[in-house]
Length: 494
Ligand SMILES: Cc1cc2nc3c(=O)[nH]c(=O)nc-3n(C[C@H](O)[C@H](O)[C@H](O)COP(=O)(O)OP(=O)(O)OC[C@H]3O[C@@H](n4cnc5c(N)ncnc54)[C@H](O)[C@@H]3O)c2cc1C
Image (cartoon, rainbow, N blue to C red):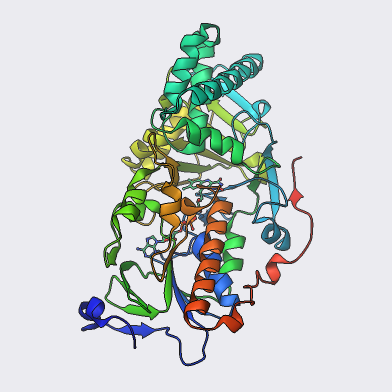
């Protein structure tokens, strides 16, 4: 074994070692860490290129921040639920088509707030009175104008600005865009929804980042995965050697081998490793790297932020709410606003999903499931005093779950230009995947998928070159038969 034993001596003593190393002439071996969509995509590509692949996952389930829960008797996504960009250019489109999955489109290309059109909202004030729809549309148009003006502010300020600072400057310059009374509360609700797009409060997210999210989004609008994201996870995982309940504690990078050690001391050795754990896990130093990560990599990890969002899904035995896509409660501050996604509209199941982002999402995690559900029911009863009690509920905790430690990455104010390049740069035989290293679509499922594909392609090329197997280099890893069916995307609302 040509592994650097000096680096690994402590791990080897008394621990069980599993080698996935290359025998003479055999194809290379890779350990993928994390069975979210990024790790699964990477593992699938290398598996289909006949590499020996082991995927180590800390949880007792697949999917990571994709978590389709079936305890209501049908799929409910407690993590990602939208496909952002319902178009053939979306890297997930071939998979979705091939699996025959249906999308429920919640917005078109030019929606003011990312994944929902203005007409799909029904808003209520704190006394349960419905906000006139005309006011919702008018304030929505004002909000669009404010956002347009923030672009000018952004261009004038070479230094970083937060979204809230930029909005403040616009309102100072254009007092006519300020809103009073109920209209002010509706404006706060739009800001609350904007915070939900980046999962972080408007005072800490970089204005460039929010504009980029809007600019870089693929065409075709946003579509809910009606059957949940789980079928994609299952399809990618098929026939892969996956070890659940394997929490990686240490990664030792030798000149020709990588040794990965899990919590119970078991070690795995391979020619290379692909790390796809969430940025929050890297930030918390839950994995020890040997040798230590270089300073430029550590800085990249700390220079990006991680936002939070939580969902509380409520299952009822009857539908007592109107047939609209989104029900919102307006308030004097964005923190106190709230909204429910009406899953009944998209799936026919009597489920409302309350969504909380930013600081509020963290605050909700301090509560027990029961009191979080009670709080949400109080909100619902403001809108519908006759609301019945839920039959069941589910509460997510993405911010404190040690397997995620947040929802997804975002640009903080003052972020250095090359932070993403440094984050995705490989270190010898260690490659990095995961949503945060995506080229253009951080924080999304399709971005995480592409980042996994990119890491696998880079690892594939690197190993074949290093191991002198250039004869195999022309073998572009296959994307598999599930990718190849050419049916149209099925969209249930156009
Ligand atoms: C509430 C919420 C809503 C979202 N909504 C959307 C949406 O509608 N549309 C969209 O496109 N995106 C959405 N996202 C973002 C999307 O879910 C993520 O960008 C994507 O799923 C990330 O995939 P990943 O593979 O990079 O990371 P993950 O899915 O987090 O996978 C990383 C894996 O690593 C594992 N892991 C962690 N630590 C270790 C360790 N020490 N050892 C081994 N394994 C470890 C984790 O358990 C996890 O399975 C949402 C996210 C959240 C949380």
